[in-house]
Length: 455
Image (cartoon, rainbow, N blue to C red):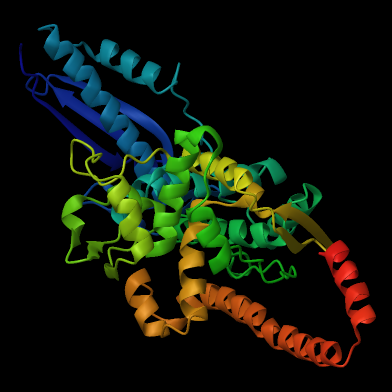
Protein backbone atom coordinates (compact mmCIF):
# COMPACT_ATOMS: atom_id res chain seq x y z
CA UNK A 1 0.00 0.00 0.00
CA UNK A 2 1.41 3.37 -1.02
CA UNK A 3 1.55 6.40 1.28
CA UNK A 4 0.29 9.69 -0.14
CA UNK A 5 1.96 12.78 1.28
CA UNK A 6 -0.52 15.64 1.38
CA UNK A 7 -0.99 18.99 3.08
CA UNK A 8 -4.26 20.62 4.17
CA UNK A 9 -4.34 24.36 4.81
CA UNK A 10 -7.20 26.66 5.75
CA UNK A 11 -7.16 30.34 4.78
CA UNK A 12 -9.35 33.37 4.18
CA UNK A 13 -9.73 34.65 0.61
CA UNK A 14 -8.85 38.36 0.94
CA UNK A 15 -11.09 39.28 -1.97
CA UNK A 16 -14.38 38.37 -0.33
CA UNK A 17 -13.49 36.80 3.07
CA UNK A 18 -14.46 33.26 2.04
CA UNK A 19 -13.01 30.43 4.16
CA UNK A 20 -11.14 28.04 1.85
CA UNK A 21 -9.66 24.63 2.53
CA UNK A 22 -6.69 24.03 0.21
CA UNK A 23 -5.13 20.59 -0.39
CA UNK A 24 -1.80 19.88 -2.07
CA UNK A 25 -0.26 16.42 -2.71
CA UNK A 26 2.13 14.43 -4.90
CA UNK A 27 5.10 16.80 -4.34
CA UNK A 28 2.62 19.70 -4.45
CA UNK A 29 1.99 19.17 -8.14
CA UNK A 30 -1.71 18.56 -7.48
CA UNK A 31 -3.89 21.10 -5.74
CA UNK A 32 -7.60 21.56 -4.97
CA UNK A 33 -9.26 24.45 -3.18
CA UNK A 34 -12.63 23.91 -1.51
CA UNK A 35 -14.93 26.80 -0.65
CA UNK A 36 -16.55 25.85 2.63
CA UNK A 37 -19.59 28.11 2.41
CA UNK A 38 -18.28 29.96 5.47
CA UNK A 39 -16.96 33.51 5.69
CA UNK A 40 -14.66 35.03 8.30
CA UNK A 41 -13.05 38.33 9.32
CA UNK A 42 -9.26 38.48 9.31
CA UNK A 43 -9.09 40.29 12.65
CA UNK A 44 -10.98 37.39 14.24
CA UNK A 45 -8.91 34.64 12.64
CA UNK A 46 -6.25 32.48 14.30
CA UNK A 47 -3.64 32.26 11.53
CA UNK A 48 -1.37 29.93 13.50
CA UNK A 49 -4.04 27.28 14.06
CA UNK A 50 -5.92 28.12 10.85
CA UNK A 51 -9.37 28.56 12.40
CA UNK A 52 -11.76 31.19 13.71
CA UNK A 53 -10.96 32.49 17.19
CA UNK A 54 -13.16 30.82 19.78
CA UNK A 55 -16.30 32.73 20.74
CA UNK A 56 -16.13 35.22 17.86
CA UNK A 57 -18.96 36.18 15.51
CA UNK A 58 -18.06 37.15 11.94
CA UNK A 59 -20.33 39.58 10.08
CA UNK A 60 -19.95 39.49 6.29
CA UNK A 61 -22.40 41.27 3.97
CA UNK A 62 -25.05 41.27 6.69
CA UNK A 63 -24.66 37.54 7.40
CA UNK A 64 -23.43 36.28 10.76
CA UNK A 65 -21.10 33.32 11.08
CA UNK A 66 -20.27 31.89 14.52
CA UNK A 67 -16.76 30.60 15.17
CA UNK A 68 -18.22 27.29 16.28
CA UNK A 69 -19.98 26.74 12.91
CA UNK A 70 -16.97 27.89 10.91
CA UNK A 71 -14.55 25.56 12.67
CA UNK A 72 -17.02 22.68 12.61
CA UNK A 73 -17.34 23.03 8.83
CA UNK A 74 -13.55 23.12 8.42
CA UNK A 75 -13.25 19.88 10.38
CA UNK A 76 -15.85 18.22 8.14
CA UNK A 77 -13.78 19.01 5.04
CA UNK A 78 -10.53 17.89 6.63
CA UNK A 79 -12.05 14.59 7.76
CA UNK A 80 -13.52 13.78 4.33
CA UNK A 81 -10.29 14.71 2.55
CA UNK A 82 -8.34 12.32 4.77
CA UNK A 83 -10.90 9.58 4.14
CA UNK A 84 -10.57 9.93 0.36
CA UNK A 85 -6.78 9.73 0.49
CA UNK A 86 -7.05 6.61 2.69
CA UNK A 87 -9.25 4.95 0.09
CA UNK A 88 -6.77 5.69 -2.69
CA UNK A 89 -3.84 4.52 -0.57
CA UNK A 90 -5.52 1.13 -0.04
CA UNK A 91 -5.95 0.83 -3.81
CA UNK A 92 -2.30 1.87 -4.44
CA UNK A 93 -3.35 4.80 -6.61
CA UNK A 94 -3.20 8.60 -6.39
CA UNK A 95 -6.33 10.70 -7.03
CA UNK A 96 -6.43 13.41 -9.64
CA UNK A 97 -7.64 16.89 -8.56
CA UNK A 98 -11.01 16.32 -10.20
CA UNK A 99 -11.42 12.93 -8.51
CA UNK A 100 -10.60 14.32 -5.08
CA UNK A 101 -12.92 17.27 -5.56
CA UNK A 102 -15.77 15.07 -6.77
CA UNK A 103 -15.49 12.50 -3.95
CA UNK A 104 -15.20 15.05 -1.14
CA UNK A 105 -18.10 17.13 -2.42
CA UNK A 106 -20.22 14.01 -2.87
CA UNK A 107 -19.58 12.85 0.70
CA UNK A 108 -20.48 16.32 1.99
CA UNK A 109 -23.64 16.48 -0.11
CA UNK A 110 -22.28 19.24 -2.35
CA UNK A 111 -23.05 18.47 -5.97
CA UNK A 112 -21.43 21.72 -6.99
CA UNK A 113 -19.75 24.49 -5.10
CA UNK A 114 -21.61 27.76 -4.83
CA UNK A 115 -19.88 31.09 -5.25
CA UNK A 116 -22.65 32.88 -3.35
CA UNK A 117 -22.64 33.60 0.36
CA UNK A 118 -24.25 30.59 2.03
CA UNK A 119 -26.16 30.63 5.30
CA UNK A 120 -24.07 29.18 8.10
CA UNK A 121 -24.69 25.52 8.83
CA UNK A 122 -26.97 25.27 11.85
CA UNK A 123 -26.27 22.67 14.48
CA UNK A 124 -29.46 20.86 15.49
CA UNK A 125 -30.60 20.28 19.06
CA UNK A 126 -30.30 16.54 18.49
CA UNK A 127 -26.65 16.79 17.46
CA UNK A 128 -25.92 18.85 20.56
CA UNK A 129 -27.75 16.32 22.73
CA UNK A 130 -25.55 13.51 21.39
CA UNK A 131 -22.43 15.55 22.10
CA UNK A 132 -23.72 16.39 25.57
CA UNK A 133 -24.44 12.74 26.43
CA UNK A 134 -21.06 11.65 25.11
CA UNK A 135 -19.05 14.37 26.83
CA UNK A 136 -20.85 14.53 30.17
CA UNK A 137 -21.71 10.83 30.15
CA UNK A 138 -18.03 9.88 29.93
CA UNK A 139 -16.95 12.54 32.41
CA UNK A 140 -19.58 11.66 35.04
CA UNK A 141 -19.93 7.96 34.19
CA UNK A 142 -23.67 8.11 33.54
CA UNK A 143 -25.55 4.85 33.09
CA UNK A 144 -28.22 4.28 30.44
CA UNK A 145 -31.06 5.20 32.81
CA UNK A 146 -29.51 8.60 33.50
CA UNK A 147 -28.98 9.29 29.80
CA UNK A 148 -32.57 8.24 29.08
CA UNK A 149 -33.85 11.07 31.33
CA UNK A 150 -32.10 13.67 29.19
CA UNK A 151 -33.33 12.01 26.02
CA UNK A 152 -36.89 12.25 27.38
CA UNK A 153 -36.42 15.95 28.15
CA UNK A 154 -35.29 16.49 24.53
CA UNK A 155 -38.23 14.48 23.17
CA UNK A 156 -40.69 16.48 25.27
CA UNK A 157 -39.49 19.93 24.20
CA UNK A 158 -39.40 18.94 20.52
CA UNK A 159 -42.93 17.53 20.85
CA UNK A 160 -44.16 20.71 22.56
CA UNK A 161 -42.36 23.09 20.17
CA UNK A 162 -41.47 21.22 16.94
CA UNK A 163 -39.68 24.26 15.49
CA UNK A 164 -37.29 24.59 18.45
CA UNK A 165 -33.57 24.93 17.71
CA UNK A 166 -30.57 25.89 19.85
CA UNK A 167 -30.80 29.34 18.27
CA UNK A 168 -34.44 30.23 19.00
CA UNK A 169 -35.14 29.06 22.56
CA UNK A 170 -36.88 31.83 24.51
CA UNK A 171 -38.91 32.15 27.68
CA UNK A 172 -41.99 31.66 25.51
CA UNK A 173 -40.59 28.25 24.50
CA UNK A 174 -40.50 27.26 28.16
CA UNK A 175 -44.07 28.40 28.78
CA UNK A 176 -45.23 26.37 25.78
CA UNK A 177 -43.38 23.34 27.15
CA UNK A 178 -45.01 23.75 30.56
CA UNK A 179 -48.47 24.05 28.97
CA UNK A 180 -47.77 20.94 26.86
CA UNK A 181 -46.97 18.95 29.99
CA UNK A 182 -50.15 20.09 31.71
CA UNK A 183 -52.24 19.39 28.61
CA UNK A 184 -50.86 15.85 28.53
CA UNK A 185 -51.69 15.43 32.24
CA UNK A 186 -48.18 15.09 33.61
CA UNK A 187 -48.04 15.52 37.37
CA UNK A 188 -46.54 18.84 38.48
CA UNK A 189 -43.81 16.99 40.36
CA UNK A 190 -42.79 15.20 37.16
CA UNK A 191 -42.94 18.44 35.15
CA UNK A 192 -40.57 20.17 37.54
CA UNK A 193 -38.12 17.27 37.41
CA UNK A 194 -38.15 17.21 33.61
CA UNK A 195 -37.60 20.97 33.40
CA UNK A 196 -34.59 20.65 35.72
CA UNK A 197 -33.11 18.00 33.39
CA UNK A 198 -33.73 20.19 30.35
CA UNK A 199 -32.13 23.27 31.95
CA UNK A 200 -29.04 21.22 32.79
CA UNK A 201 -28.70 20.40 29.09
CA UNK A 202 -29.35 24.03 28.09
CA UNK A 203 -26.68 25.30 30.49
CA UNK A 204 -24.21 22.99 28.79
CA UNK A 205 -25.23 24.39 25.38
CA UNK A 206 -24.79 27.91 26.73
CA UNK A 207 -21.16 27.11 27.53
CA UNK A 208 -20.41 26.04 23.95
CA UNK A 209 -18.91 28.57 21.60
CA UNK A 210 -21.37 30.18 19.23
CA UNK A 211 -24.44 29.62 21.43
CA UNK A 212 -26.24 31.88 23.84
CA UNK A 213 -29.25 30.71 25.84
CA UNK A 214 -31.18 33.60 27.48
CA UNK A 215 -30.83 33.92 31.26
CA UNK A 216 -34.63 33.95 31.52
CA UNK A 217 -34.66 30.41 30.11
CA UNK A 218 -31.86 29.14 32.35
CA UNK A 219 -33.61 30.60 35.42
CA UNK A 220 -37.11 29.51 34.34
CA UNK A 221 -39.49 28.26 37.03
CA UNK A 222 -42.79 26.54 36.27
CA UNK A 223 -44.42 28.02 39.40
CA UNK A 224 -46.50 24.86 39.61
CA UNK A 225 -47.76 23.77 43.01
CA UNK A 226 -46.38 20.48 44.28
CA UNK A 227 -47.59 18.57 47.32
CA UNK A 228 -45.34 16.44 49.48
CA UNK A 229 -45.17 13.00 47.95
CA UNK A 230 -46.77 10.10 49.80
CA UNK A 231 -43.89 7.96 51.04
CA UNK A 232 -44.61 4.24 50.93
CA UNK A 233 -43.16 1.67 53.33
CA UNK A 234 -44.18 -1.27 55.49
CA UNK A 235 -44.85 -0.93 59.20
CA UNK A 236 -42.92 -3.33 61.43
CA UNK A 237 -45.86 -5.71 61.93
CA UNK A 238 -46.46 -5.79 58.17
CA UNK A 239 -42.78 -6.49 57.54
CA UNK A 240 -42.78 -9.45 59.93
CA UNK A 241 -46.01 -10.76 58.39
CA UNK A 242 -44.48 -10.55 54.91
CA UNK A 243 -41.18 -12.12 55.98
CA UNK A 244 -42.90 -15.15 57.55
CA UNK A 245 -45.77 -15.58 55.09
CA UNK A 246 -46.28 -19.10 53.68
CA UNK A 247 -47.04 -18.91 49.97
CA UNK A 248 -49.45 -21.36 48.39
CA UNK A 249 -47.70 -24.30 46.72
CA UNK A 250 -44.38 -22.87 47.95
CA UNK A 251 -44.13 -20.72 44.83
CA UNK A 252 -40.36 -20.35 44.35
CA UNK A 253 -40.63 -17.11 42.34
CA UNK A 254 -42.68 -15.40 45.04
CA UNK A 255 -40.54 -16.76 47.87
CA UNK A 256 -37.31 -15.50 46.26
CA UNK A 257 -38.81 -12.07 45.51
CA UNK A 258 -40.10 -11.77 49.08
CA UNK A 259 -36.77 -12.87 50.55
CA UNK A 260 -34.75 -10.42 48.46
CA UNK A 261 -37.11 -7.55 49.34
CA UNK A 262 -37.10 -8.38 53.05
CA UNK A 263 -33.31 -8.68 53.05
CA UNK A 264 -33.15 -5.12 51.70
CA UNK A 265 -35.67 -4.05 54.36
CA UNK A 266 -33.57 -5.66 57.12
CA UNK A 267 -30.30 -4.13 55.85
CA UNK A 268 -31.22 -0.87 53.98
CA UNK A 269 -29.43 -2.07 50.81
CA UNK A 270 -30.42 -0.58 47.48
CA UNK A 271 -31.21 -2.89 44.57
CA UNK A 272 -27.81 -2.11 43.00
CA UNK A 273 -25.99 -3.08 46.20
CA UNK A 274 -28.08 -6.23 46.65
CA UNK A 275 -27.09 -7.26 43.11
CA UNK A 276 -23.43 -6.55 43.88
CA UNK A 277 -23.35 -8.22 47.33
CA UNK A 278 -20.64 -10.88 47.48
CA UNK A 279 -19.69 -13.34 50.19
CA UNK A 280 -16.53 -11.31 50.87
CA UNK A 281 -18.65 -8.32 51.87
CA UNK A 282 -20.06 -10.24 54.86
CA UNK A 283 -17.70 -10.59 57.82
CA UNK A 284 -18.10 -10.74 61.60
CA UNK A 285 -21.87 -10.51 61.45
CA UNK A 286 -22.04 -7.36 59.33
CA UNK A 287 -22.00 -6.11 55.74
CA UNK A 288 -19.03 -3.93 54.78
CA UNK A 289 -19.01 -2.61 51.22
CA UNK A 290 -18.89 0.45 48.97
CA UNK A 291 -22.25 1.46 47.52
CA UNK A 292 -22.69 1.30 43.76
CA UNK A 293 -24.65 4.55 43.47
CA UNK A 294 -22.59 6.93 45.62
CA UNK A 295 -19.37 4.99 46.34
CA UNK A 296 -19.95 5.50 50.07
CA UNK A 297 -18.68 3.00 52.61
CA UNK A 298 -21.47 1.33 54.56
CA UNK A 299 -21.23 -0.90 57.61
CA UNK A 300 -24.45 -2.73 58.48
CA UNK A 301 -24.82 -5.10 61.45
CA UNK A 302 -26.93 -8.09 60.43
CA UNK A 303 -30.21 -8.56 62.29
CA UNK A 304 -31.75 -11.96 62.95
CA UNK A 305 -34.13 -11.42 60.04
CA UNK A 306 -31.26 -10.81 57.61
CA UNK A 307 -29.23 -13.75 59.00
CA UNK A 308 -32.22 -16.06 58.62
CA UNK A 309 -32.50 -15.19 54.92
CA UNK A 310 -28.75 -15.60 54.39
CA UNK A 311 -28.90 -19.05 55.96
CA UNK A 312 -31.70 -20.11 53.57
CA UNK A 313 -29.52 -19.20 50.59
CA UNK A 314 -26.24 -20.56 51.93
CA UNK A 315 -24.68 -22.84 49.31
CA UNK A 316 -26.69 -21.18 46.51
CA UNK A 317 -24.15 -18.43 45.76
CA UNK A 318 -23.39 -17.66 42.11
CA UNK A 319 -20.26 -18.91 40.39
CA UNK A 320 -18.62 -15.47 40.69
CA UNK A 321 -19.30 -15.23 44.42
CA UNK A 322 -22.51 -13.18 44.59
CA UNK A 323 -24.66 -14.01 47.62
CA UNK A 324 -27.92 -13.90 45.66
CA UNK A 325 -28.89 -14.51 42.06
CA UNK A 326 -30.82 -11.30 41.50
CA UNK A 327 -33.13 -10.79 38.48
CA UNK A 328 -33.40 -7.44 36.68
CA UNK A 329 -34.90 -4.55 38.63
CA UNK A 330 -38.11 -4.65 36.59
CA UNK A 331 -38.57 -8.41 36.91
CA UNK A 332 -37.91 -8.27 40.65
CA UNK A 333 -40.40 -5.41 41.10
CA UNK A 334 -43.05 -7.37 39.20
CA UNK A 335 -42.46 -10.48 41.33
CA UNK A 336 -42.52 -8.42 44.55
CA UNK A 337 -45.93 -7.01 43.62
CA UNK A 338 -47.26 -10.53 43.09
CA UNK A 339 -45.77 -11.70 46.40
CA UNK A 340 -47.19 -8.71 48.30
CA UNK A 341 -50.62 -9.32 46.78
CA UNK A 342 -50.53 -12.99 47.79
CA UNK A 343 -49.51 -11.96 51.32
CA UNK A 344 -52.44 -9.56 51.59
CA UNK A 345 -50.46 -6.33 51.82
CA UNK A 346 -53.47 -4.36 50.62
CA UNK A 347 -53.33 -1.30 52.87
CA UNK A 348 -54.78 1.67 50.96
CA UNK A 349 -52.31 4.39 49.97
CA UNK A 350 -53.81 7.76 49.01
CA UNK A 351 -51.70 9.99 46.78
CA UNK A 352 -52.70 13.63 46.39
CA UNK A 353 -51.09 15.61 43.57
CA UNK A 354 -51.56 18.50 41.17
CA UNK A 355 -51.75 18.59 37.39
CA UNK A 356 -51.53 22.27 36.58
CA UNK A 357 -54.03 23.88 38.93
CA UNK A 358 -56.14 20.74 39.34
CA UNK A 359 -55.86 18.90 42.65
CA UNK A 360 -56.31 15.16 42.16
CA UNK A 361 -56.23 12.02 44.28
CA UNK A 362 -55.45 8.40 43.51
CA UNK A 363 -55.95 5.36 45.71
CA UNK A 364 -53.80 2.26 45.43
CA UNK A 365 -53.38 -0.92 47.37
CA UNK A 366 -49.83 -1.12 48.66
CA UNK A 367 -49.25 -4.41 46.85
CA UNK A 368 -49.94 -2.68 43.52
CA UNK A 369 -47.23 -0.03 43.96
CA UNK A 370 -44.59 -1.73 46.12
CA UNK A 371 -41.06 -1.59 44.69
CA UNK A 372 -37.49 -2.37 45.71
CA UNK A 373 -36.88 1.11 47.09
CA UNK A 374 -39.77 0.76 49.56
CA UNK A 375 -37.59 -1.77 51.39
CA UNK A 376 -34.98 0.91 52.12
CA UNK A 377 -37.69 3.28 53.36
CA UNK A 378 -39.04 0.49 55.55
CA UNK A 379 -35.63 -0.03 57.15
CA UNK A 380 -35.22 3.66 58.00
CA UNK A 381 -38.79 4.14 59.17
CA UNK A 382 -38.84 1.09 61.43
CA UNK A 383 -35.37 1.84 62.83
CA UNK A 384 -36.20 5.44 63.76
CA UNK A 385 -39.62 4.43 65.15
CA UNK A 386 -37.75 2.02 67.45
CA UNK A 387 -35.75 5.03 68.72
CA UNK A 388 -32.51 3.91 67.07
CA UNK A 389 -30.42 7.13 66.77
CA UNK A 390 -30.41 8.76 63.33
CA UNK A 391 -26.59 8.72 63.27
CA UNK A 392 -26.62 4.91 63.61
CA UNK A 393 -29.20 4.57 60.82
CA UNK A 394 -27.21 6.90 58.55
CA UNK A 395 -24.11 4.77 59.07
CA UNK A 396 -26.06 1.86 57.63
CA UNK A 397 -27.71 3.72 54.75
CA UNK A 398 -24.75 5.89 53.76
CA UNK A 399 -26.68 9.16 54.11
CA UNK A 400 -24.35 12.06 54.89
CA UNK A 401 -26.75 14.72 56.14
CA UNK A 402 -30.23 15.55 57.32
CA UNK A 403 -31.48 16.86 53.95
CA UNK A 404 -30.81 13.58 52.13
CA UNK A 405 -32.25 11.66 55.08
CA UNK A 406 -35.35 13.88 55.38
CA UNK A 407 -37.72 11.86 53.13
CA UNK A 408 -37.00 8.77 55.20
CA UNK A 409 -37.32 10.60 58.52
CA UNK A 410 -40.80 11.68 57.42
CA UNK A 411 -41.78 8.03 57.04
CA UNK A 412 -40.67 7.42 60.62
CA UNK A 413 -42.81 10.36 61.73
CA UNK A 414 -45.81 8.64 60.19
CA UNK A 415 -44.95 5.39 61.95
CA UNK A 416 -44.55 7.18 65.27
CA UNK A 417 -47.96 8.81 64.77
CA UNK A 418 -49.47 5.35 64.42
CA UNK A 419 -47.72 4.23 67.60
CA UNK A 420 -49.11 7.26 69.46
CA UNK A 421 -52.63 6.08 68.64
CA UNK A 422 -52.04 3.46 71.37
CA UNK A 423 -52.66 6.29 73.85
CA UNK A 424 -56.19 6.63 72.52
CA UNK A 425 -56.75 2.88 72.50
CA UNK A 426 -55.53 2.60 76.10
CA UNK A 427 -57.83 5.42 77.16
CA UNK A 428 -60.90 3.74 75.64
CA UNK A 429 -59.86 0.34 77.03
CA UNK A 430 -59.53 1.79 80.53
CA UNK A 431 -62.98 3.34 80.39
CA UNK A 432 -64.53 0.09 79.15
CA UNK A 433 -62.92 -1.93 81.96
CA UNK A 434 -64.26 0.52 84.54
CA UNK A 435 -67.80 0.24 83.16
CA UNK A 436 -67.60 -3.55 82.99
CA UNK A 437 -66.57 -3.76 86.64
CA UNK A 438 -69.81 -1.99 87.60
CA UNK A 439 -72.12 -3.97 85.23
CA UNK A 440 -74.42 -6.79 86.33
CA UNK A 441 -74.50 -10.29 84.82
CA UNK A 442 -77.28 -9.61 82.26
CA UNK A 443 -75.53 -6.55 80.93
CA UNK A 444 -72.25 -8.45 80.62
CA UNK A 445 -73.97 -11.24 78.65
CA UNK A 446 -75.50 -8.72 76.26
CA UNK A 447 -72.15 -6.99 75.81
CA UNK A 448 -70.45 -10.32 75.17
CA UNK A 449 -72.92 -11.18 72.41
CA UNK A 450 -72.51 -7.74 70.85
CA UNK A 451 -68.71 -7.96 70.93
CA UNK A 452 -68.77 -11.42 69.33
CA UNK A 453 -70.85 -10.10 66.46
CA UNK A 454 -68.81 -6.89 66.11
CA UNK A 455 -65.42 -8.61 66.17
